[in-house]
Image (cartoon, rainbow, N blue to C red; front, side, top):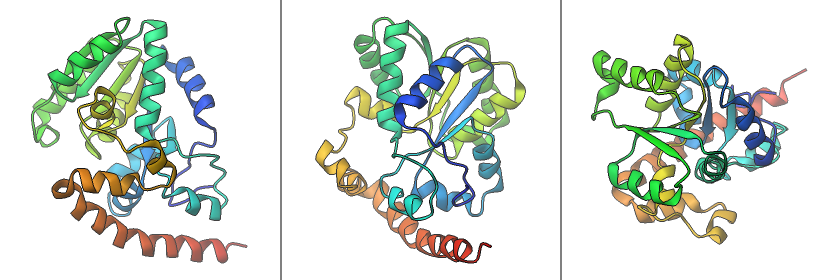
Length: 244
């Protein structure tokens, strides 16, 4: 059953990792990681909605959303934060000796990752700021992914840009592998940005840790999303109640 119009992945992380491993040499598909911000964006952005609908896997990234999904019987057993998923998939990449393309991020992050995962071949393309509004820059990004075959493509250019890129790559049908739309996950993985302690994550307070860590960038967005999500949840509840 869809919640917020999203057909969420209904397995746990172990099953998702197994599925991703089975897809890395198939035609390109991608994973999106739904959180409160995405639910809000999906309300009025039909292009973003189309990219979400076309994803191979739509996982719940947010422990904040999990009580809501349980209330609506979405069948989602657990939250799978994108940062946690990225660590597990990169561990598989190290074991299997995969090639990993990173779109976005910075050279210093890639240097740390190369030291941490010596069996992985990293390919890196960092499009310029504002690239998504420049057709030539978008085309250059797509061609880099298509011309450099990799088992894994990690998108680190933020939403909705990363999801739109993955949709374009999948539509063109020239690439293989699995795309991960996991935003800042590589910053956490490299240690460039410190993730919340595990006890904070388990209390579903990672959002608060992130606000305190980056108040200028995140406080306004989180306040906006928090106000917008309330009527969206209320509407979903009303729809559920009136279902035959």
